[in-house]
Amino acid sequence: MNIQPLIKTSKALVAAGKGLLAMDESTPTCDKRFEALGIPKTVEARRAWRELIITTPGLGQWISGVILYDETIRQSTKAGVPFLKVIKEAGIIPGIKVDAGAKSLAGWPDEKITEGLDGLRDRLVEYGRMGARFAKWRAVITIGDGIPSTSCIEANAHALARYAALCQEAGIVPIVEPEVLLDGPHSIERCREVTEQVLHAVFAHLIQQGIVLEGMLLKPNMVLSGSKNATRATVDDVADATVHCLLRTVPAAVPGIAFLSGGQPAEPATARLNAMNTRFPTLPWSVTFSFSRAIQQPALDLWRGDEANVPAAQKALAHRARCNAAAHRGEYDSSVEAADIFNGPGR
Ligand code: 13P
Image 1 (cartoon, rainbow, N blue to C red):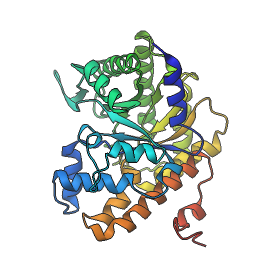
Image 2 (cartoon, rainbow, N blue to C red; image 1 turned 60 degrees about the horizontal axis):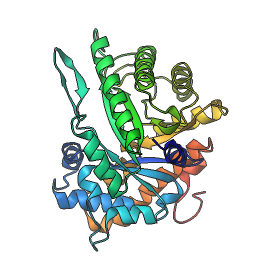
Image 3 (cartoon, rainbow, N blue to C red; image 1 turned 120 degrees about the horizontal axis):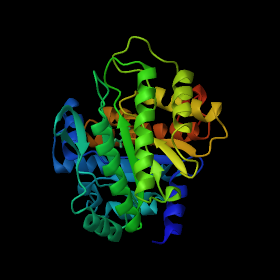
Image 4 (cartoon, rainbow, N blue to C red; image 1 turned 120 degrees about the vertical axis):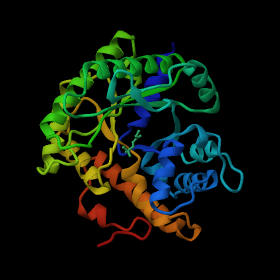
C-alpha cells in the first residue's frame, strides 16, 4: 500500500479554512427532502439540484471535497459536462458514499447496522478509476431506553473498520462516520457518554484492522442535547463537551475531524464549530465540517425546483460554505453571517 497519497489527500480535505460538502443523499433521502418542498421526485430534478450545487461560483474557495452518490458521480450538467470534470475544475476533490444504507439489526429491533461490504472491493476500484479519491460510510447509533446495545456498537464499528481497510487498499481515503443520532429526549451528558463509547469501539476496530490513522478522517456527530430535551446546551457547552469527548477517544495521528450536521439548524451548527476552534486553538487534529443539511437546506428552500431561483439558491449555498470555512478558522461571527457573499460586506 502506498500511504503517501492517502496522507496527502486526507490533509488536503481538512486544509485551513476549508471543509467538505456532503451531497451524497441516497435517492429515498433526496426524494423525502424534495417532497417536503413540492419538488418533483425525478432523476432530472435530482440532477438539476446537484448541478446547481457544483456550479456555485467560488465554491472551491471554501469546499475542499464533495461527497457524491452513485447516481450523481455518473451525471453531467445540462450542457453535457460530466459532474466530475466540473468538480475538478473548481479545485474540489471528488469523493463517494459507498455504504448501502442502515438496515434493521437482526435481534435488536430498535437498532441499525450499515450494510454494503459485499462487493465493496470491486466498487472501490471502479470509483477510484472514475476519479474518487475518498469515500464515506455512515453508521447510525440510536440513543433510547437500554440502547445502544454493545452488539450494535461492535457490529457497526467492525463494519466501519472493514470498509476503511478496503478503502486504503484501493488508495482511497476512508471517511469514517459513526453518527450518534440527535433524536430523542436524552441529555447532552448521555450523548457524550454514548459518543465516547462508540468512538472508543470504532478506534479499537480501526487499529485491529491495521488502518493507517494518518490516511483517514473521522466524521462524528457533535455532542448535543437530544432533540426532545427541554434543557438546551449552550454553544460553548456543546463545544466543550464535544472536544473533551474527542480528546479522550481520537488518536492525534488522525489528521482531521469533519463534523456531520445531523439535523442541527445551519447557523447553530456553524457557531458550535467556530466555538470549538476558538476555545481550543491547539487541538491535535484539524476540526472542520462535512455538512449536508446545514449547507444545503437554506439553498434548497430557496430553489424549490425552479430554474429562476438558481442564482439566489447558489448565493445561499456559497454563504453557508463561507460561514463554515470561517468557523474552521475560528473567525465566524455575526458580521460574517450578515455579509453579502457576492456584493460585499453586509454592514
Ligand atoms: P448532515 O450534515 O445532514 O447530517 O449529513 C451529513 C452526512 O453526510 C450524513 O451521512
